[in-house]
Length: 277
Ligand code: NAD
Image (tube, rainbow, N blue to C red; front, top):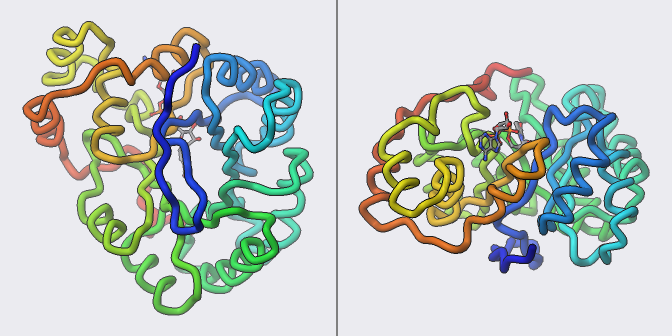
């Protein structure tokens, strides 16, 4: 299967495929198979993290696929305990080694852990990874507006991306507006609500699915793409991977988009980053 997945320009000068594949909670024993399936389906953007304990298996799948490195976009993230123990350089090198890569396309601070007050210092180390070419782009995850504002004021490079919880129930409007003014791309994690809501049984998602003869999950992903989010759904099932990738053959109407926009309850399904330290 092939599809022309749009790319979004990053302030780093590189670009990111707007639809990727996430591997949170994919068991290491299954990860190589799952990522090989995703690559076969057509995904060329894989999102992992040191904290997912499956970087080596992601790397094994990349190498087994034979797909040229420059055709695949790889993100991983600094694990909280390495952030806290100030082992940033070591953690980055070990991630590259586990993945079997000489550079990443995107390296993220996984959580700001604001009470520890390390993220400015950590970011300065991230800037060196970008300067020496080992991270083509650097970004953050789970940063709130005050964390971003401080980073922008006190360091040299504006994060290319902020990867945050975002789905129809929690649309992050204030954060998105701030990010748009600073050329920070919004990447949605938990784009399907992590299965914690009955999003797929909810109007107007079900009506749009019927109207376009697609599944509710495809409607939700299409909504993300049309709002400009980068999106990284996860599934262990190759059928669902294919379903989630097949979202370029229809377009939601302005009215359907507005009705899904109206589902926003500004409510998280996961923890508040201010409280994770
Ligand atoms: P998600 O919203 O992608 O939901 C995954 C769940 O939806 C799984 O249970 C899956 O079985 C189900 N699902 C997938 N496709 C489906 C379909 N077509 N129909 C019905 N059910 C379907 O949640 P997620 O995995 O937490 O988020 C996606 C990715 O975001 C992760 O894999 C990870 O890479 C990233 N992530 C990042 C952070 C962070 O702190 N930066 C946190 C969580 C996730």
